[in-house]
Image (cartoon, rainbow, N blue to C red; front, side):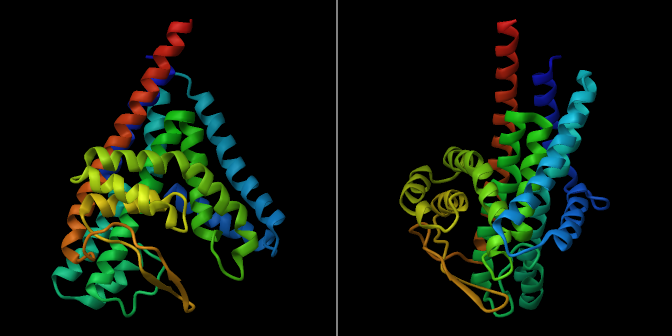
Length: 315
């Protein structure tokens, strides 16, 4: 077994572990990284792009370099496979995302609107206090779509390209974007580098997410139409692709007004040409996200195997 085959097997094992177990309940390495990042922010924060770029370089660069050393030490195929599987399991978030979406849906089905609003806070940063059931459903669907691209597909892409360092580099950049990459008074400058890096790293994964949605979704033509027409109107160059594709594939319309804590308001462009989403659309969204995630795992493993064969042929 060569290194690329070990990588492919590790990716598939890690994806399977995420599907069966979900995120580690305790001592999650991503949570540990978040605590470290928060501590460093307290020492480094300044209303400065340069200071924010240094913050990102220290954290993402340090974590990625550590992962590169770990992968280099794990030269034996079995060790390489196990390391790749463990890191893949730790960085993926597909199963936990699905559980949160299903939990919100369960509250809605039981008529517990307050419970659904509270649980939704685990998925979105918007103010949930006055959301209607249909607005909750839209928030869940948009979160599932965006995070399937961010937390599953893009991780697999970078694993196929750069192995364990790719997994760690993407996940740390994505975590920093979630922590400091916000358009508000505190982070507009300091979080600029984190947000731009996450946009750049997420570019290939978001496009693969769109392609996979076309392949496995229930309405390919509508998904492609929505992607081509609507994605560019989203404020995120990456989230727009997957949200528009999901909207078209599911026959619904996403986007609209979002209100965030602190009375910040965003009027998002509409994605898709279908009806407004409703709670009944949450379960089909979960199924579509699961298929897209599985497709990304197979794609990443196939790329790794092809690269391994190419290396063997050159030798």
